[in-house]
Length: 234
Image (cartoon, rainbow, N blue to C red; front, side, top):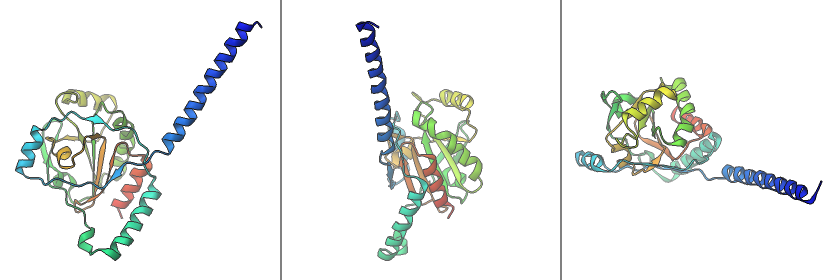
């Protein structure tokens, strides 16, 4: 083996080592990423809110894919928070704001509303778009949860329909090709407006009274979804 061949082999081996080290480092960083959970707050919903929301540009940018806490951590954190709050606050202060009964539309333009779809059940609103990679990554287990808990929890898959990047044609094609069987809704920009969110996906969880429980900006892990569902069904 001549010197050139040895140098070539050394170069190739070094390159492979660098790739392996980079992959290990990436996986470690990914696994240690902080969850992006938030306590949603809402702007007041009025006729004027609806007009402003309709006038707002609706083009959205996807949030980065993020890791979130697993279900056991969610349950433990919430239980601990509830104990502290029960000591320090009155019962009324523990209740989150109630989601207004905003209008919703099926993709065939049939009009309904948040309360009509919820029908007295807890609800999960998953705000997504067909072109959003983290949205597509989490949709399979969201749909599986819909199949399993659809009688007990209202799943509202709310498409970020803006008539530009996301149209009825693009979401219709996506539903057929993915495939995706759960009902898909759209609104007039009101959800994004009242929650002041520009992140896709955004997921908000509501109790049986329509009060906010918690929410996530960015991709929700399967374990986190299971934990949040357990809280809604408690």
